Length: 170
Image (cartoon, rainbow, N blue to C red):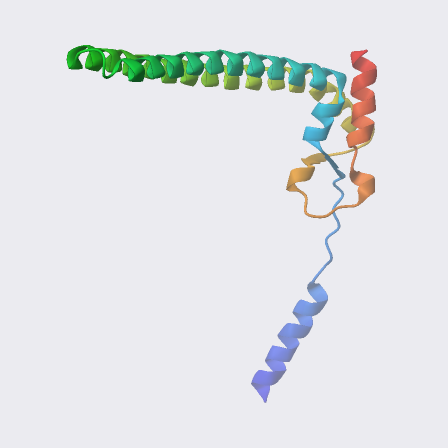
């Protein structure tokens, strides 16, 4: 019986010592992808990225078509030329295919680097504006909507930031 009283007393003390925690941190969220797609500076960066991507794709398509043409020419000559000549031409085709793969890898690497640099430039330009907005509105934490499960729609400041960024960039 004494043990029950002790447990009850401990639970009673713990129950009344629990305090509720209230956060004084102001939190808002922003859709970064939407922000970049709908601000003037973001549109320019995305346009530059798309142009470089299109140029790279055209270069690679042309090189790929050239390789296919060369392959077809070699197949047509297969029964006409000697076996040594055929093997030599196949080896040339293989080396050109390896060069194509290396060129493609280099273009992809350069494109990813360019894309990263363009987006970094956008963030460098908009970050001070966002920080100023956060300071003016007493916002301590800003989260991307991709990392939010649920939140009040009033804490989404994406549209407000788009207006501010577009006004400053004009």
